[in-house]
Amino acid sequence: MDTPSLKEGNAPNISADPSENRSLLYRRIILPILALLRRGASPRRLAWSIAVGLLIGINPLLGTTTILCFAAAIALRLNIAASQLANHMVYPLQLLLLVPFLELGSYAFHTKPLPFSSKALLEAIRKDPIEFGRRIWRWEWHAFLVWATIAAVLVPLIALILTPVLRKLSTRLQRSKNNIEDDRFLQS
Image (tube, rainbow, N blue to C red; front, side, top):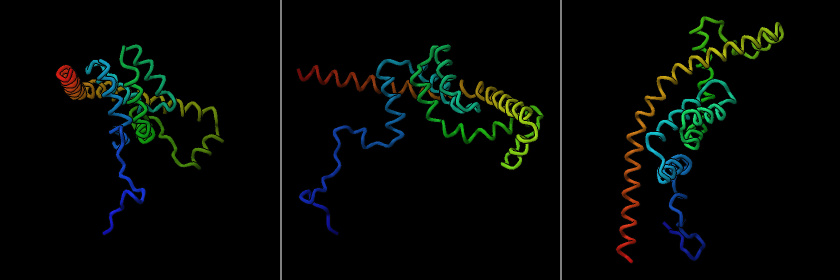
């Protein structure tokens, strides 16, 4: 089996920045969280920020997550960057969970289910557009209430799980920083 030589221009990919060889998940999620910890963010507050961002990110009111997340972070004095990072990370889940939240809302509040076929939707719109608008609003509102109930339980649970993990990471980073400073002192 032939191995490419350096003469042929096939130099191995050796990057000066080790994070370039990491996965997208690591670069886009883990590194920013590590950076926040390095800058002195409290692991507890960071855990709450991430938990709030994750849960707000899956709420069934499409188009509201960024502003809701920002408002919650300000009101609760959380880390805005961490909550927005978590919020945007779960955007695909918001789309996947929209229909289940709508169905749970209809079930919980005993309302007619949303017609999911395009033919039924068009027929309902043609028949009475104002009533259809009211129904859409009701379905969204009920889905939002179901989501809020679930979020009220899951946010503290997620924060409780993340806090020790982030504390451990913070301790490791602090030890690593101290070791580097000790090495610099010994070298001078």
